[in-house]
Length: 73
Image 1 (cartoon, one colour):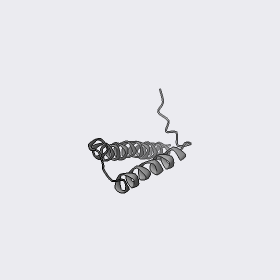
Image 2 (cartoon, rainbow, N blue to C red):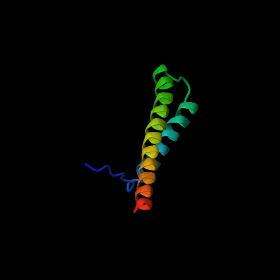
Image 3 (cartoon, rainbow, N blue to C red):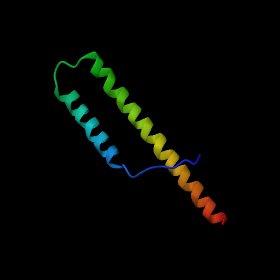
Image 4 (cartoon, rainbow, N blue to C red):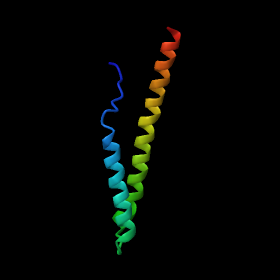
């Protein structure tokens, strides 16, 4: 099975970023923050950063591997 990185749905990253920014603005602006939201938003941000870092690191590794194969040929 060959690994392929699909970057055709880049708009998903944009929608997700807008949603996260909206949540942060709501968290800052709305009074009476509940404990659930106080814990959920930082954890969600950490998860999103980790997920994005994992994808882009592996994408970069794949592009380096492809360049190496081209140089060897």
